[in-house]
Image 1 (cartoon, rainbow, N blue to C red):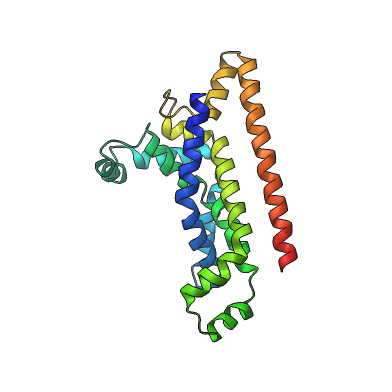
Image 2: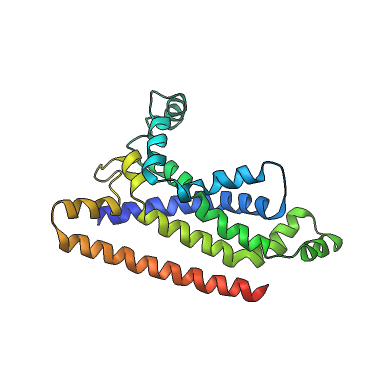
Length: 219
């Protein structure tokens, strides 16, 4: 139960903290063109193609107390981030950026420029247009982003193991608990935990599929 609750806690904070960032980045990528856009998109979507252990290694090095970044963050959080829950959250934010950005970007891109210009002509500011016109039309895409981020965080293994290790009650998430159960030949416990993750993943995919169809019909 403890690994499950820890995974839920990690997924919750990752989703809550990352979703606003994903909305902002997705909107910028959907509406604006600039010279470095291809490079920005490459960096945003890099975790999709980079092996988790590679990303986990670089995060482990960067967050180490011997590194300038890790030393500075350690002073801010009053302790080293490696092998800690706070370090897991930071690692999860970086790993899940593409899952928060891509659905948001597609949702904002589905809003025609004519709609936004009509809002401006009607006297709405850019901020008012964002709140009253764009967000209501993008809520399905944002729901997809939240669902995908939450589900992927629950199942993340490589980066979590590299950065957080396997500390009971602190960094031992559900995916690591499954690995430990298999290593101990406790197939009953491993089967129960994997069945739960499988069920949640299927539900997440159904939600995304339904939301995607609604977005497509709304265009």
